[in-house]
Image (cartoon, rainbow, N blue to C red):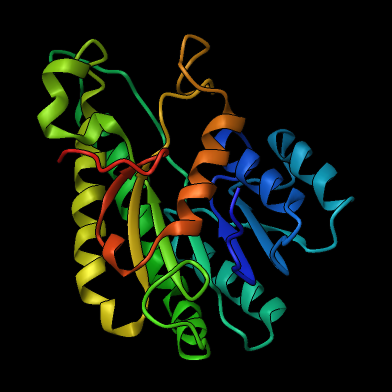
Length: 256
């Protein structure tokens, strides 16, 4: 796996699944970041135990309480991260936190639609905006040319279920709220890639594959280790040509 070269990385939804495995693999790398910030809504809860074990073994890992749907929580989390960075800025933010409900068109209700939209779209918007000053600082202080995860980048974890062209092929799982939220997340990422390009910040959306997690189920194709390794490998190769791109965990271009 190629090295990321990022001094600091923040991962949301890091208490389980792909987020937890991404943190674990970042820490195991020979060129592990100086700081890895693992965020979750309840770091002291039962699901935070695996992260706590990692914290006891890695001095560069910091658990951060962050509710992606709460502006106050995001503000507090950004202040915590800034304190550790001591003026150097944040290189890489991975918006991984999300929820999934496999609900059909006939049964979906208003709250299910709004719940997924709040977490899967508004959440990444608020988190990205809350940490934007730290990303800008990293970009301004970098000697890197162009755009990259070594300089400053925000990665939004999306899904093939957000591919409008592929709906006829993937509709075995209707998951209407999830699908709609991921389409909106893709549009958000594209808008961010245009808005903040001149700030030197890269924005890319990545489909992690169908993964054996609580969300994906055990019948899925990939293990969390395979998905996380693929994602990190793709991140290490991103450049300005990938700004606003929709990629798979293998680095393949995804249809819209």
